[in-house]
Image 1 (cartoon, rainbow, N blue to C red):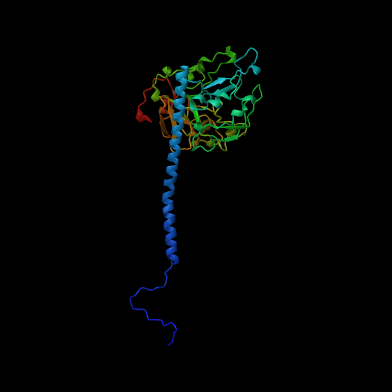
Image 2 (tube, helix red, strand yellow; image 1 turned 60 degrees about the vertical axis):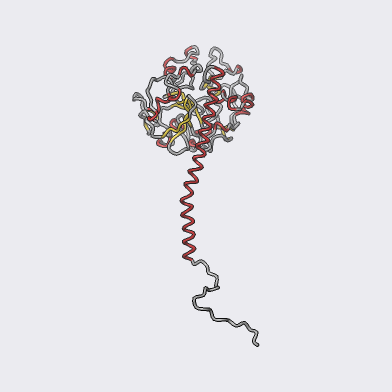
Amino acid sequence: MDRRRIRRPRTPGAPSMRRAGFTLIELVVVIGTIAFLIALLLPAVQSAREAARRAQCANNLKQIGLALHGYHDGHGCLPAGRVIAHDPRYVVPGAPCAGSTDRSHLVSILPHIEQSPLYNAINHGLSILSVENGTIHAAAVSAFACPSDPDSGGERRGRFSESTPFPVSISRVSSTSYAGIMGSGYSQAIPDPRLLCRPDPSEIAKANGCLNDLAPLAFATVTDGLSHTLIMAEKSTTILRGLVNSTNSPVADTSGWWFLGDFGHTLIVSAVPPNAYRLVTSVHTSASATSSSSMHPGGIQALSADGSVRFIKDSIDSARWDPASGLAILGGPPGVWQKLATRNGGEIINDDDY
């Protein structure tokens, strides 16, 4: 008998045993379908991540709000927005108020956000900029950094741009994403050596915010209502990338430091609307360094004096300003954005206004 394998004919209609494969067209269709699904899911994933970062940012501001209230409960007032350095080694004879601006209100609230060791590491009898306090300059405080603001919260280059009568130790710093609101416009109500160390009365009138140069203010002075008065808002450090000042120096190296109380660092004004930097040219830094800004799309997070956090849209009603210069146009009526920054303007603001 022939033992060779006998191939039997396939019964008509029976399935073939040959293994099927993908054709080139089918492979292209599958790859295209997967790419289409990824294109649909990617924005959703990015949106979810931004929502999480925005929630964390709001939580940071709430922590700062609780700390400000804790400070107020313990001292009967809010911390000053900025103070003048009184380092005894460098006091100018006959002009004890001639020092540079010093520590920020964020330094004052450190014990109220579980940062007592950092607060105790500061030599409070010396300038915050002194060599002796150099160890705290690069200290990162997570509550002071928005997760959507990548240049904030981590150690980076720092350079002090102002002239001081004493040595400073500024090389590496940590920045913050949040700043106190001094008011609706710029003011310099610090003690003036030309006025026997008294502030200029005209500048005092301009200091209409909650965190400014005036003697520490109590919540009782916020006659516009705590819920309708903003005390802090976002000020992104990341947006300063690539900007230069009048001396062609990088603005990012000299702005946003969490420990220094001054414009461009931890103090802003509401003279121009939120995120005004998006509408001005890069040579104008005032709208970038001294106004509210954020990496969140569509607006900024802001802290009210009552401790609540709200999202303020870029489209909020604001006073007239010049996008060409980045400065407010003086003499016009204030907008809702400016009214929210004042503590005692007597304005009537509805919740639907912002």
